[in-house]
Every structure is written in structure tokens, then in C-alpha cells.
Length: 451
Image (cartoon, rainbow, N blue to C red; front, side, top):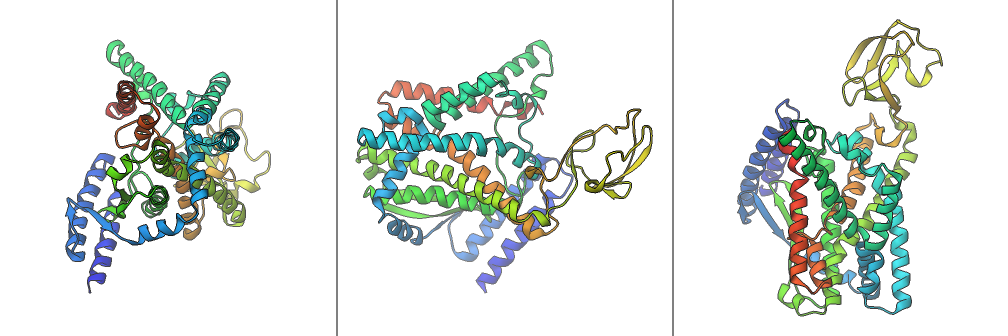
């Protein structure tokens, strides 16, 4: 009976949030309403399941995660090598001075990490923005943000920086550079009366299933991310002979907001720096490697599902955002002849928003820019199962990369802060870096307050 009640609460909560998302309310109202529903649902679920809840936040503890971590930890050499590889991803060539192995082993690990960094930078990272922006409609990028690394010289500088200092240097410098752009735009707007800040995209955004990413696909992707991240921490904790006090998943209402592993922090602090670094870096390393796995899986899926894709033109400008043109004057766009229009003629466009009438200009154009939906980020499927798989794969590869990199920032409660403290034995310096990055982090959020 309790299981039936739980299922009913979960289903009703999901439906309620979905209904709110479909309304024309302002995003802020949608967010507040969804938070209220989730908090209420969390309290009801906690009462039914006899769990402790704080304003809808539920910690679901389980021994199962610890048992799995102990089983995986039997391959100790592999996991220690993986963690050192993670340090090389985090700190690039500088990891040579951090990893405690023979010179030959360190060179091999760093060389492997540089190959992985190159793949992530050249193939994975550049595709994240288009996929999230066009496939999922997330309001990220654009404006002045899009031109940050357009300069070839700047691109080479970024590449050299990542090789030298890894993804920790990459995300730190990116945050600082964009913070400078945002602060300059705020100064220009407030002092000089320009519109610079309204043309500047926020550097950071919250990831909220059902609000700015699809609800169910988002939840599944977040579960994957959390299990990979926290599971890796757990395995390296077991190998380091650090007791795990508890493990489980944290829920806010029906949404998993974090998997957690609770190692004995006092015991962890007594271990060598080498052991502590391996435990700390394992989560980000696992996310970055998982990002590559889902990236390859996504493109394999796109290749195999080609016969089931929708055909059309994805409009980039000149019509409402997200418009897809399927046919012109009843002829599917993929079957149009080369001279399908005439100057000043009136044409009928079949779109995902219905029929639209458009008048050609004197040169035979009709004032839009578009890309064919064969281009991967614009892929769509009529089949809901294929669409679900596609969006889940997009989120799994993109968010694993984002979370893996952002977690390397030297900020409170981020793994990057612990890594910095373990690598640099100078509290004044680490505190200075922390406050500087915290200021840059908050600066990246400023454009939201000028929208």
C-alpha cells in the first residue's frame, strides 16, 4: 500500500511540475512554484516512507553503494593509476611535480592525459554549446560570450594554458576572463548609460530539470553523473583504507540533487597527501572520462538512427527561435529544386508552428538564415522513445564535462579547493585564490540581474 502511495505522489508531482513548465508564466514564477511543489512532495514522501526530511530534502542512505565500492576497489592498481591520470587532467604538465611515481610512469600518464585533453578540447567541448542551445533550447551562450575564443591567437593561448595547467587552469582563467567582460559591461551600463550588460550573456546558469532542461531526461542524466562522481570517490576511499560512514542519494522532493559518500574526514586527514589527492580528484576524472564515453555513444546513436530523423531547415534568424521549416508550397525542403522561388513571389511555409505566408524580396530571398536538420545539434525525432534517448545522451555527455571541469574550481565545497590546499602549502595564497575566484564566480551571475 505504501509503495502505491509513493508511486502516486511521485507521479502527481511530476505531472504538476510538467504542467507548470508548459504555462506562459515567467521563469522565476515557474521556478518558485516548482520548488514549493517539490518541498511539499518531499515532506509527504518522507512521512509515507518514514524518512527524515528537512523542507523536502531527503537523504536516502544505503549500504549497497559501499558494498559495490569495496568490490570495485579490488582492482587497486587500476584505480590508483586512474586517479593519477585524473591529476594530470586537472593540472596538465604541472602534474609532473604532483604525481608520486617514477619519472617514466609520470611521463606516460601525462602524455595520455594530454591526448585526452586534446580530444575533449577539439571535439567534446565545442559541441556542448550547440547541443544544449539548439537541441534543448537552453538559454546559454550568445551575445559577447560567443566571441570570447573566436581569435585564433587566443585559441592557441587557451590550448597552451590547458596543456600546462590542465582543466583547473582552463576553468579558472575562463571564469576570470569572462568576469572581466561582465564587470566592464556593468561599468559601461551604470556609469556611461550604454546597453552593454543587456547584450552580455550570463557566464553561469543553474541546471534545473523541468525548468531549463527536460525533466525526465535531465533526472536520468543527473543520476548518471552523481553515481559516477561519488562512486569514484568511494572506490578511492576504500583503497586508501578510509572508512565510509554512509552512502546514498539526496533528493529534493522527487529530484535527485546529489549522490553522497561520507568518508571519515578525520581519518582522511591523517592520510598522506598522495592518498588524499587521489580520493578528491577521482570524481572529476570520472566525469570527464564518462563525458567522452557518452559523446561517442551519442554519435553512434545519431549514425544508426539516421532513417528516423525528421527532415527540415532549422531557422537561425529571421523567424521565431526554434522554428523548423518542413516544406515550401507543399514541397518538402529536401526535395526542392534549385530555383524554387521567384522574386517578389508569395510562398507558404509549412513549419512546426503551422502555416506561415512569406513574400520573397527582389532577389528571390525571404529573409531567413537556416541550417539543415542533418546537422547533429538540430536533430529531432518524431518517435518519442528515440527523442528521449537522444536528449538523455546529449545531457549525459555535456553535463558530465561541465560538472567535471567546474568542480575543479578552487571554491568552498568544490573538490578543486581541496586539491589546491593539498598541492600548495601556503594558506595565505590559497585563501587569496579562493576569494578571487569566488568574486569572479559571482560576477559571472550579474547579467541575470539586468535581464
